[in-house]
Image (cartoon, rainbow, N blue to C red; front, top):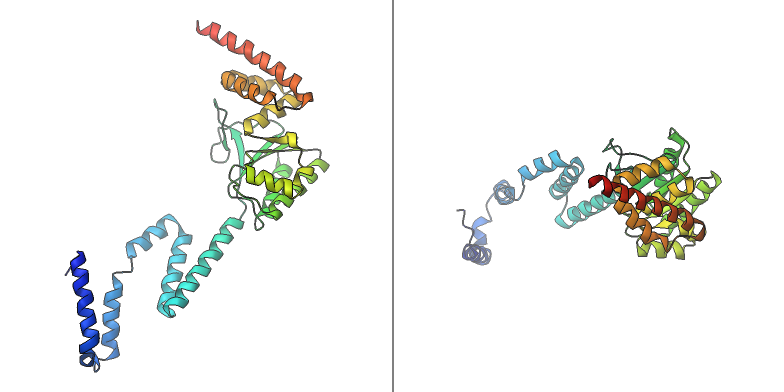
Length: 293
């Protein structure tokens, strides 16, 4: 009758118990079709057709999983159907995670942030530097795919790639195959005379790289906290004045702070170049302040 209170539920449960205890002989002669109709009417409210339409519109994969679960319940016993739905869902989850999704990064104009150039074509890339970010975590199922995708980006680049920056911000954990892949990639890039850098490597990932011996192939000085620090280090090593000047003009104060923070941990051979860049930032900031006055 449309009642939704707790009392209505208690009354319905009580009536059900009484019928099951004392009145089941009255239903003994009912055809199975009638009993089936009763079950269908009782269960029909549990099938959310609008929800299925919503899943179909938003994400077809989730819609397929919902239909598989529905058909399994209609075909098999309840526990078997639930097991089928869980197994299929886990298989779909692993399959999606195993597909390497790689974003090629460019600098957002006027900012020190980096995002996918395919989604934001106005982003600016740096000559000779390939910046990439896995959009899902690295693990055994997708490690080889990510390596192939990175090598393919290097091969298809319009200009020679001198350095690769891998942003691991989306990788919160790393297994042994993933660490081995990074070590193999570093060695392959070294054979190609391409520098390999990492950024946003969180503590558990760094620990796995150390335990797996991957840091023997990846230089410690090529692991950075933020991508922009790796970019500045790369530009200073390449003496790319044009790119540095563009960064300086648009982000002078922020870049000056980043350089000062990274100077203490920089290798000795990099400190002189970083100090010279900081001096240029100081001059640029003073000129900007004079212009505003």
